[in-house]
Length: 431
Image (cartoon, rainbow, N blue to C red; front, side, top):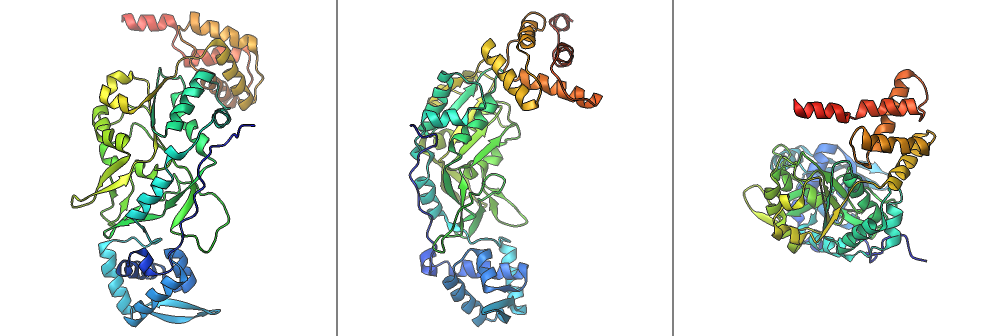
């Protein structure tokens, strides 16, 4: 029997370093980090200090001895057999200096080189996507087999896809269902990345969903085991949002959306309606889509190279040929047109929405509705209409203090409230 999950190469957890030498001798950077944590948190046990910084006991002990020898911290008691440490007045003054450089005081960042290596190992191009996994992920939607095959083929490529078609056809719903195919597969996301002293916060609890699992003391807790991420951006997208987000107060960076989406899916919804011009966005991503790497700019103008290992979904109700030139469209090798529903599909969608809302399904009424849409309202069978009309019915029932029900009266009221009649539209066009 065919597996209903995505197959990927099982990657072992990153191994925790045991000495400072194993993390590229970043002794000074780590000393500053530990002192800032103590400055902000107050007295901590060595265990709490290590848990906050995500550093192992041997590294913590070495760094602690150096900070204590410089009289920047001191032991103020014991909790069982664990030392409790507090910052000294001299340490407080030094920590304030470090805070003026940057206020990052969380888990120790991983080196940019280690991040690049791990992201490449976890690339979406290494996934094997099969029909059973696609059917399971899209079982809540009504799609024909050809569309599902095209979507699965695009996902198996690990590249990108253009979803286009008229408004209300379900492009956004389809785009947001694509990450469900990858939900069972886990990847390692760092809390933060460091390059030449610059800190970039990567882990975002809104984007990155932790996978509960047993852990080993040998695992590097600077990394978090998560589902493959999904990032959705819409009309709010600007060209500035595609670069590192520097906070002038905290003086460290937040990763842009495409970096947070690495090893997962980035959905650009309503493409062509962003505040950034389509050609500007496309020019920005010609190289990343082709070469699988991106350049991000630090304050001062220095650029760093980061992986662009993600599946990009462009969803638009515009003609792709009017949004992008041939050179860009060539880099998006799968284009899927999402059209209107057939009568059979429309009825099935209506049936499923009725079950979800908790009202009885009446096939005769739905057939009558389809005739009404065609003859009176001059509307096609958009897949969004069943949900929208049943929402109207539910809202009216809530207002009237009764349970929603599907009958001719409630359905006609919903349609009158939702649609502009063909006659009224015609008069409006003539005026």
